[in-house]
Image 1: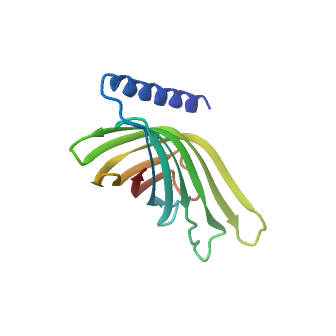
Image 2: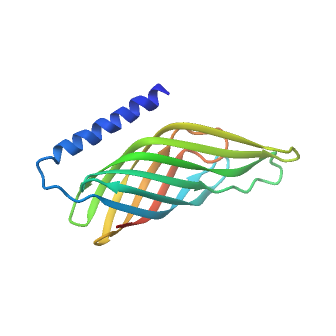
Image 3: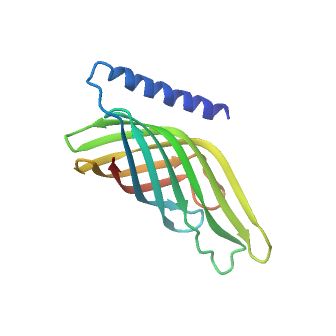
Length: 181
């Protein structure tokens, strides 16, 4: 829990530093954005599964935003002789996003925040489902390309806390599209 609080404190400090750096720049209006994506996550002892991600946030400036999202960790098909069955799960996060323009249309970004995850597992022949939940550090980095004003596509690597011993790993690669309001 201390690691989460320290990481969250660092995220707030970074966000404050970015906001202070922009204090001398003209004030940009606050913008909301939302998007969807396809997220690929690897399974322990299995292949890669592609799930859905939805996200949204509020951009306070061109470089600082607060974002939240949900990723669906699709269930995996177990081998015929496997005793455990991967029933999927989900991950959620809230993070500060810092963005830096590289060109007029291409930007790099990083995110730091907190993630809450759940993996569901079943044992063949036994009733009930085991849920493995945790709260940990969320981090991501990637690139965003503006197709036109208010519409952008992004590619990012995300880390949702610690790896689990079963089910989806904590790493995900996401391709997404987002719209500003």
